[in-house]
Structures are given as C-alpha cells and as structure tokens.
Amino acid sequence: MQSRAASSEFGKEKVYIRVRFNGTPRRCLLDTGSDATLIPASMVKGCRILPTNQKVSAANGTDIPLIGYTTVPAKIGKQRIEVMGFVTEHIDVPYLGIDFLTDYDAKWDSRKREVTIAGVSHPLLSRGSSQAWIRRIVLSDDVIIPPMSQMNVGTKVIFGSPSVERQSCEQSDDDMNVWATDSHEIARGVLVARTILPDRASEVPVQLFNVTDRPVALKSRAVLGNLERLHAYSAQSPSPPRQQAPADVENQIVDEMMNKVDPSVPDEYKVKLRQLLLRAQFSGIQQERAGSRLH
Image (cartoon, rainbow, N blue to C red; front, side, top):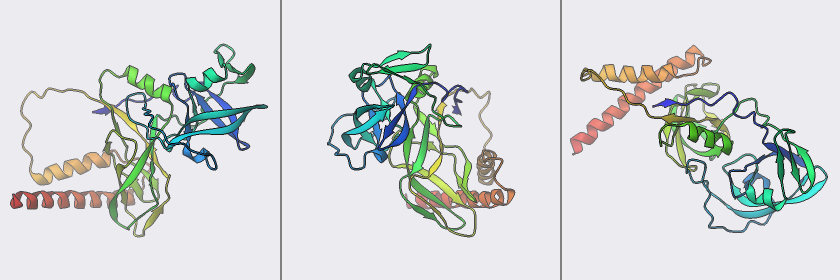
C-alpha cells in the first residue's frame, strides 16, 4: 500500500460561513453533499439532546457515531437562526447540510463567493487552517505513558472536510477504505507509530512510544496526528524471495519503521526508539514461539 497525498488546494475552498453560537464566532461548513446537519458535541452544552436511531456515514461509508438530535440558537450577522442537527463527537466544526440550506432558502453565488440565507448575503470563507486534513485522530481519554515503554491507546477519528473526502474517494482507482497514521513526534520524546487502522470512528487503537526516562501525561482530545488514505498496488516478483534469517528480518522491519520517523526527531530519541522497537520485536517472536509450543 502507499498513501494518496491530498491536493494542495484541499482546505482552501470557500465553503464556510461565520456563525455565532453563544456569542462565540465559529466557521461552519456548508455541506451540499449531506442531507443532514451535524453539530460538534462540544457546542451543545445546556441544550436538550433527543435520542435518535438515525445513521450517518462519511463519504466512503465509515459510520459516524451520533449522540442524539438537538437545536442550537445562533446568529449569522444580525440574523437570529436555529441550527437543528445531529450531535457527534467526531467533527470539530458544524456541518450545515441540505436540510439547513433548504430551511433558510440558501442561494449560493460562486462568482461573488457569497451565500444568501433568508434573503441576506454573507461572504464565503475558507477553513482558515494552516494545514488541510481529511481525517485525524485524538485521544479518547487522559493517559500517562511510563518511561522507556510502548503503549496502545484508544483514539477517536475526527472528520475534516466531507467534500475533500468525497473528492479523494472519486479520485481513487480502488474500493479500499484503509487509513493509517504516520510516524512522528507528538511531544518531546513521545512518538506515534505508523499503523494501519480499523475502519471505524471510535475505539481506534494507536501505539505510542515514550523514549524518555520520565512518565509523560497526555490529555483527552489531544491531537495525535492526521491520517493518510492508502490504496493498493500489485507487484510481480520474478523469483521467489530469498529466505532471511530471523535476526535479519527483525532488523529489516525496524529499519523500515525507523526510516519513516520524522527527520525533526532528535537522534538521541531515535536511538532509544530503535532499542524499544527491537525489544518489542523480540518479545513478539518469543510469544509466537511459546504459542506454537502450546499447540
């Protein structure tokens, strides 16, 4: 597999409007590809949330878990409005779907880069982020990673731009829906391992390495990184691969993993990370051998 890089134009489309919720301005995505409006759970404090059996999914079919349905008072410019939609923990900005656009008789003027809502024109904005992303993962809970250790942590997927994800799916020449983390440092001496993730939005396991000599605490909702969408490729080998000794295989796997570590990671941490990876490889092989003896 290899990653399909996002276009440099991703995140620059003017498809957002500024809406005030409880006096706080937020950029809201106008999502013409969605029938339903979605509201971040962080924005509905004090609102009554009704239960729902509705199912909502991302562009390529991944289910987006819902908490319920609610109505949030808001203002666009001087207009008072109500945003009605499904509540979820898996977005960070509101998605105003076809239901909202229809209720407020929205008219889109691409040439002027503005949208008319209930007869009043408002400028369209870009996401405003310095780096475009399609999906990212955040910690589900507070964690403390012991010194010189590896640890699997639970994460949640946050969905970025639905339009970008749909474009990514349309450009793909395969039906795979596989996403992965990349190796990088998220805090001093704490690294995320490159991992292929299961196709779900909740309880997504990700491996972290702490190569320092002290415990490191990370807070719930801490961003662990953006995800890459992978696609398949086929390759034909002219001859059967040469059998390698176990030690060679271990070193090759670790070398490949180390090659993916972000260049900005200090060399001293790379040395410690390599030691941890070799220790993990050895431990895994020992467990496999023990398991085979039991059978």
